[in-house]
Amino acid sequence: MKKLLTSLLILLPCVLLGQEQVYNFSFDTWSKTKGAWDLYPENATAKQQVWGTVNHGTSFLGINTTAPEYEHVAVKGKGKAAAKVSSRSIMGTFATGNLYTGKFVKIIGMSGAEMYHGIPFHSRPKSLSGYVHYQPGKIDATKKPYKEMKGQLDKGQIEIALYGWKQARHFVSTDGASTPAAKDPDVIAYGSLVLDKDTGGYIPFTIDLKYVSDKEPGYLFIAVLASRLGEYFTGSSKSVIYVDEFKFNY
Image (cartoon, rainbow, N blue to C red):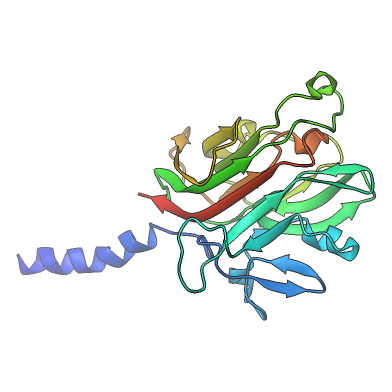
């Protein structure tokens, strides 16, 4: 019995380490650099800089498509905040509001952006839960192959993917179509929630992860999109998505 207890005590830290969460999953911690909102504190360590936005490409115009929300939160309390993600028309070009695990690199003229997707992650959660409030507008910006969607109600999305990437983060350019997360050859698990109407306030959600491989994950990608077709410059400049209190379930 003593040997069994000793073995369990040795294994316990490994079990706990296998149930990772993500820094600032509550979206409570924010700071501002040269007019751009970041989802980490001032003087943050590299491990704390897990959330990326396009803010550092738009803030010189006085625009932050992702910003803290202190009044309209899912869980009230001192120091509580949520993330407000808004699609906008910037100098006549549609820019989807987005929030993702990774790092923004730069804007490519008025035709897209470059960024790194993913953060190191080695656990296998069953699902992602949290709160979301979606307010869609009617699509007022379109581009091929979605020209016929103008005037339709926009759709938002929260998606999550685990990958077996070997390189540190995954370089992405939105200056043209890229491989959808679910179809990436290195995907280990994927889950998505598509929002197609106004939720009327915060609602709880749970996104189940569907595993397609028994490999150990190497990287995690989560994206929150006010306009799910924003990569194709299609969506509504009035769409807004609020997210709060994310958590992995094991």
